[in-house]
Image (cartoon, rainbow, N blue to C red; front, side, top):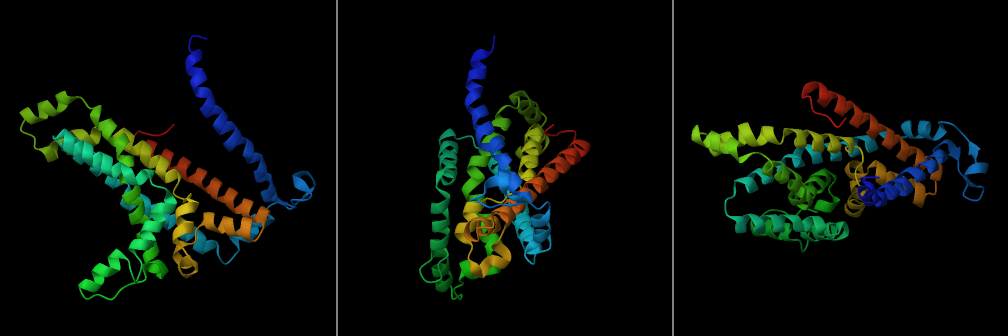
Length: 293
């Protein structure tokens, strides 16, 4: 009762997760049925692991798993370090006006709709009027139809994601850097430490728990590539590198109306993500002593 006001503030978030995340889990049962919308879940026939077996043995299984993993993996490998580096650079910027302007500009892409971001990417990479191909023409290079080249899809997806989220993702690292005691930097400066030494021996160790926590959370989503951006950027020409589990679920469930099969694929992906984050958490606790739980 002493903290009742705090619990009242917690209620909206609690209701959100209960009604929009836990209650809908009941619908995952259709993954084990031949679901018929007219008969409903109670009267649809049970088929066990039939749809899981069909997915694992389908000709698309390897391609979907590979594309989903690589897009998530590349986003972490090439994108995770940028927010940390940007936060460190902001920490070292002494001019407050320059720092504020840099932060504001870097945050803007995060607030732009994914549809608009995808539209900008398509416009910039257009083979006829795009900025990139226009610059290539001026230096004598042959224009490339980037959006129809499978080999370019992962690069486009990863690089655009870095540009869109780098500034926003750096906020938590910058806040963690701000919590480090200034006396540590003062003592290092008295000992003659350079800026690089202070970053390496004070800043990075000081934010290590935050880095590991965010990394574990990102690893947990390595197999959960968002649907919207991939759907807006990929096309039939780039299915070999751009078709992922979420887009396959969309086509199977809503386009082909294979509701049970799509639910089975989605549930398979969720269980796989759970296994990944539990394994990474255990590994991080063993190697560094830091973990989510």
